[in-house]
Length: 466
Image (tube, rainbow, N blue to C red; front, side, top):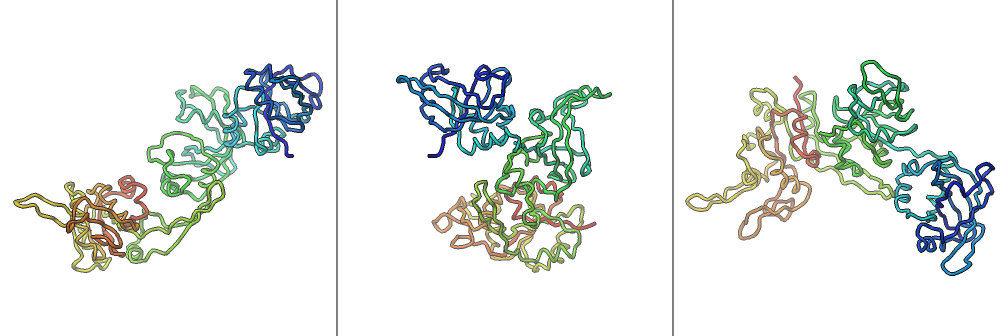
């Protein structure tokens, strides 16, 4: 029969600390428990040979050792006496340190105010390994630093400003310990991750430094650069999607990551084309605009090891040209893309709505249905919309969802039935090669902010080299 595993809270006087603790036996009585009824229930689970972690809760807090149940007595109903033998001393690791492990943090948070708490075998083995010094419990952080670090060099990271004000995310500096891993985040040239480092010294007060009100700092060693990933690349990862530190306005100096998030960030992954891409040469722009999207797939692994196939990226719906100060972008784009002479051409303004794109009923002398700019041209391969940035991104969602293969209901009737937009069996069918050729004076960064992240995979941005 396999043993049970327990965590035993014990006072300082339970053992003779003048002598070697190994081999000493301590006797615990369930009736002297904080709550006698709970103590009895906890003690009743124990059997001879069960394994126990001794944790000292008086004087110096921390692990004492590991041992075994060597004697079990029940002299009367409602009272149990157990003899515990300490067989191995462990380093005095505290609960706070053990809670750095995500798994142990959950276990410790569930413990009751009682002498004896059950553990899983996995928890027991990890605690013993940490207590022996065989295993360290590292934590993982994302740190924003703009300094150009050099591989192998050690750096001082001050946790307060020169005026003594705590930097955003200060509590995470307090949590850092030697050996913790850090990913370096920068805001330029693009917001993203650029390197990895290791904490070499926890937060400590350094000698007074002229010009600084406070000299408290952590020390890190820069381990090297990585293939940088922008926050938009990271947001496409299922394990990172919609995390607060991937927002454009994230302004903390440091935040904590889970091990899974840390590992996913450093995964090489498949090098895919960026969803919002600029091209440096005009001939490349023309070539790329006519290239079909290759089929590709990617497999993501969950923390439990389960593999989840990711769908191949959908074809780009909007091919967006950054025109800047070009005087006649329409003719340039049309000629170089060799678009048909009758390709529909529109200039958007701030009055355009969803009804303008998909159709709407307008009350004139009689109620008249006005076809939408998109719905009446879906059988063509392309339409051109200049100043497309005048459109609110939300009005494009029905088209984007239809391009992904969904059938979307539109807010009006067609032939007595609800109108729909989709790839098949819909009132308005999206041609597989249909695309919007958009023109905008926005910059690439403006475009990223203008369109939500879930739209980025369906947008391709081109920029002429000056």
